[in-house]
Image 1 (tube, one colour):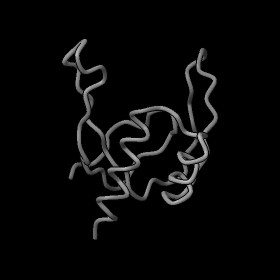
Image 2 (cartoon, rainbow, N blue to C red; image 1 turned 180 degrees about the horizontal axis):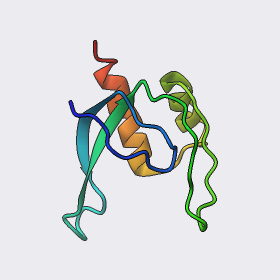
Image 3 (cartoon, helix red, strand yellow; image 1 turned 60 degrees about the vertical axis):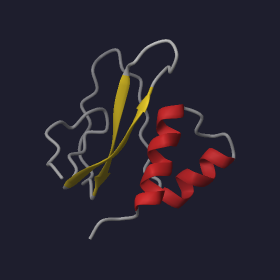
Length: 93
């Protein structure tokens, strides 16, 4: 585990960050790999988006996020992989 240093687009800094896995972004084309993390207990914070960013944040629980995948509301592959791995991992003590 390591403590998150950046607030990112959400403006939150998680109390705990756990690496859950890694995925290849485009197998057969590149060896680019992204690492996936779970952030736990993020406090609500004031966002400071850059001028060009048009981002809306929404807090949903893991179970609801999994349903959103099934409904086709979440379609990004890396997000789906991260949520699946988070569900399989369970919440750390």
